[in-house]
Figure 1: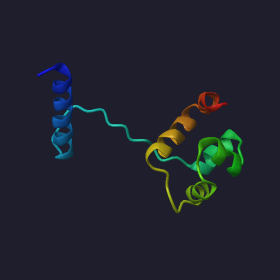
Figure 2: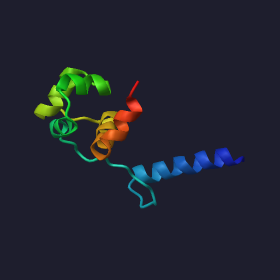
Figure 3: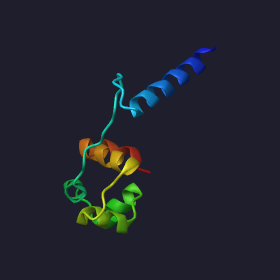
Length: 95
């Protein structure tokens, strides 16, 4: 067995153990809930600018701000990054 196979095999076993509720040492990232409207206001953007800047549909942004939907997956990760360091995220995304 080469080292790549061993690493993949170990990772799969750990994932299975974790999914079965077994106690294993894992790092789990759980992004915190973000108040999207508060974040957008803190950054100082309109809904239209915010949506366009971060590739979010305006309708989706409005749902998030009303609270009838919540960001998930990569969108929630992006919003967490924005909450922590909006200047750096905006700088990285500049054209």
